[in-house]
Image (cartoon, rainbow, N blue to C red; front, side, top):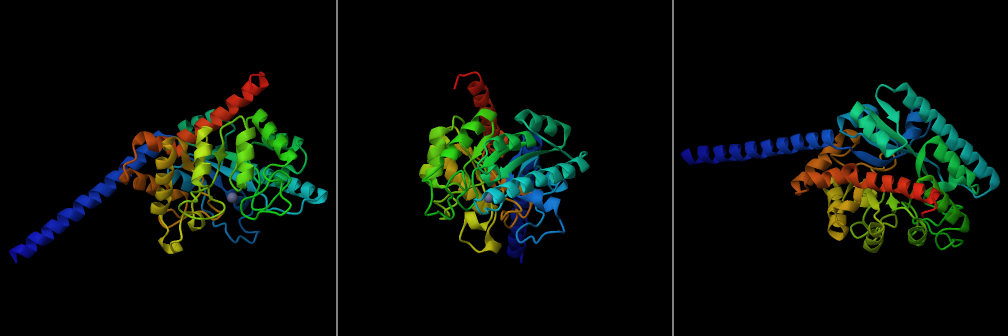
Length: 365
Ligand SMILES: [Zn+2]
């Protein structure tokens, strides 16, 4: 009997200690999210917020809202205007541009209605200021350069509208480049001539060139041509999950060599072959570990792809961000590394992109 009591007491003590440790990790995570700027560089939530009832949403589930961002300690997010790839015809190009501009206008109305909670950011400084004010930072992005058509002036139009990166393509070839998911027999073997002009213009404007979704040949054309660090807004590790959208170790090394950053996407499709109900922050943390071991902690961040296929168990929406921080703390990540992961690395790339634009304007690059 005495032995049993001792055994139970030991068990209770172990559980109590363990529980306390978990609580301590969460306390530390709270502190980190309070102290440092946290950024998610990709969600597809804008269209969902624009049309919450009116569309047939096969993927969007409302994983991002300003209250959920606040709860999860997420300061800022890039809200992409997503364009499905359509035909490369003049009329289609015109209509997709009009659609994109209308979506931006609708989303601006939405954010204006929530001005007590959130505001648009156009520069890294804006994001830092909004964090101090306790407001969520909202940055626009264009997912799929299809919206640019074959008119370079439209790159400027999207910049003026507030977009701070353009994902060059989606799953199919467009006028700019080849895509990774479904290679086309009529491809350019990378960037088209027009695509080269687009990258140059984006450099001049200080707009980040997003290589997520682009083919390997496109990536290497951008590495050769772009004067700014390479930016992948939502891509994961091919060595762990063999998916054409994911980046190979060589690609990760070459992106890191430009001073760039890989913002890891979430969701079973890009993380693991494990069943969906078993896919968790642990799988995402494995991808983070892999990049850290390969090129160091300076080249990793997060682009959840929420409302576009992102999310796992314990990471169902942006209110659960701190669960990832807890997992990384358990794996021995330092406060400094977590500061870099949650925003430091990405902000370095954004700031450098703007600096490059200023140098180009002065004729120094
Ligand atoms: Zn995407």
